[in-house]
Length: 256
Image (cartoon, rainbow, N blue to C red; front, side, top):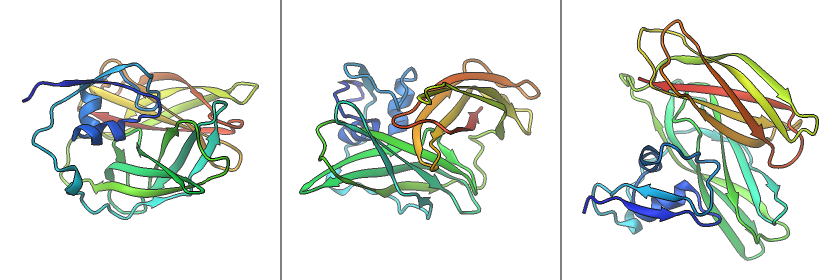
């Protein structure tokens, strides 16, 4: 039937795995639960799971061949409870934007292997751009392990696609906490062309350590309309999963 279902988040789950379990997309779950942050899932939270359009054969899912984006080596930071946050950057060297990028992050140690699916915090990676992905692996994990990644999906944006507006982040200001464990970030999102209004505005933040590894991801979601000639201010705190934050980058996305 078309009746939505409810899923209670358990330890170690992410949206990619939950979506696969119910035969729906990550974006469909996020649309049904606009209040959730896909990078900070709280155990015990009840998610509304929209009904699948049709019965899905999970053994033979049709998966489009991903376009040739480039993935950097994953970086994993251990947590005090024995779990680990793992991150990497996805670079788009193509002359066209790509969307719906998802990556399967893997941890292998001894005869054990763990996998989690991670999605980019924004839908679109512009031509020549990059975005981070990250996911959490719950304890217990092997004492020593290797991290790897497999590209699951990356679709080219259609030439006549009108779903995204041209926007950019301006006046980015980053204040690092003296401990290096967090940073206060603020700035403005500005439309860079056209007269359309943005009703969905997102800003993705990524924290990097001195070696250039991603150590934290956060997404800010705007409240209100983004109008031509009028900026939308954002203010967010991003936290490190391990090590001191050296710098923070920000990317914006808007839809009519």
